[in-house]
Image (cartoon, rainbow, N blue to C red; front, side, top):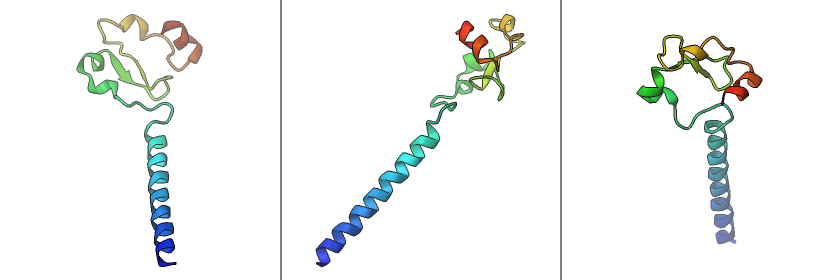
Length: 85
């Protein structure tokens, strides 16, 4: 009987650990979040700006040599973004 109680206790602890891992994963990899932050890439960081209203959270920088022509668009509009990606 003591062994059964121990197995149940360790089983519940393992289940709780698994549940915590799942909750953590959902929070970390939720929609709209990035596994790799584009601002950590110096090449990308010089061409984009953080824009919380933008569909992906970033928009082309008006001072970017490569993307300045795209900075005038409304990157919070999902249909417009779909056209340009």
